[in-house]
Structure formats: C-alpha cells, structure tokens
Length: 240
Image (cartoon, rainbow, N blue to C red; front, top):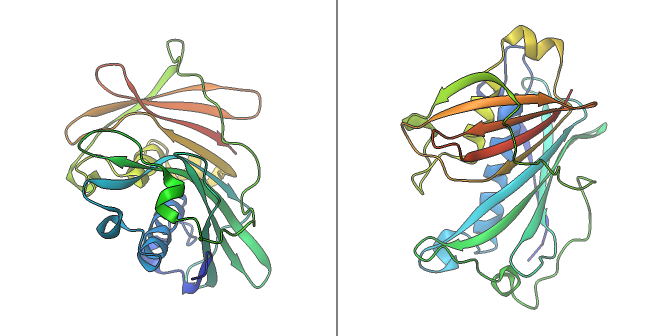
C-alpha cells in the first residue's frame, strides 16, 4: 500500500473566489477531503479506527506560492509523516506542470470521543507501515501566545448549522471561512495571503458567537477567535 496518495483534478467554479482562482478556504477543504480519501484507502478512516475514535486536526500550516485558476488541471498529493507517540503530521501538495503551487501540512491526533483520551498513533498505522520521508511544507508551526487582552476587535461571527461537522462541532475549514469573511473582497485582493497557520484550541458549537481579535507583528498579523466565555477557540498567524 502506497504511503503517498496522488490524483489529478480540475479546479471547479465552486472552489474559486471572486478572482477566478482557488480560494484560500477551498485549499483547506481540498486538503481535508484528500486526507479523508487517503485514510479510507488505508482503512484508517473512522469506520476502521474503532468505536468512538476519530482523527482530530490540531493545527495546519499552508504556504501559497500561486493559486490555480478556474478549470486548470492540478495534481493533488498527500502522505503521512512518521508519527510521534500521539501526534502525526500529514503533508499536502498542489502542483501543476510548472511545479509546486501550494504546500501544506497538518498535525493530527486520534481522540476517543467518550473518554477524551488520545490514542497511540503509531500503533494505529502499524509497525510495517512504510512512511514517505518527503517534506512538502518546510518550517515549524507558528507559536502564538494565548494572550489577546491588548488585541483589537476585527469582527464577530455567529456559528450556524452549515459550519457543523459530523462530530457536532465547528468544522476545521469553517474557521477559515469565518475568518476570511471578516474582510472585503478588496482587502483580500489588495493583500493576498502567502502563509497561514491555524491552531485549534477548543471546540466551538452552533449558536456561539466568536469574536475575532488581532494584533500586528513585524512580519505577520496574529488573530484569535474567542468564544463567549473568553476561551480561545483558534489562533491564526497570517503572512501577506
């Protein structure tokens, strides 16, 4: 069984933004979908993991070199990195005949939804699994301090039914959609996102209102999506 999964695809209209290119939000959905497909092929999806066990994304890093245009043909690839005790990276690559277009990686763990305990990821893959040593997305995940007491408020977002996934909390990619929705199309066109790191800190649920706060660094802007009780649901570091 190949540790790397690759397929060709055409970029459809439904995944493009107002510029006619693959949207930043759709990058995250494509990564999520291809990871799910590969897990199914490897028989490591939720149906095969065991009762009450689910893959959970801890954080994701994406580097945008250039976004593919509507109807362009691309190659999508993904593969898991050799895991540590309870966490594992999965790499992603979107490319075309001219080379890499978008690079990404996400850190995953397996959680028992009844007990909240983490499973040993290495045991889930098995001792004989041959991991790919390729690295799609270089660099460490962003480290963001969870202190936004001095941050400014950008906007608020109320979680609705279309944001909820099969575990009944806010879908990972929905955080990106909510974040991007805080900006106008003019803002997004004027200053395209080159790199984005998101870390998921706490689960969010339908009906909750997230307050999006921000503060500027020298070469990036740091954002937090804060729940009504003051808990940080997610943090983002964005480079434009």
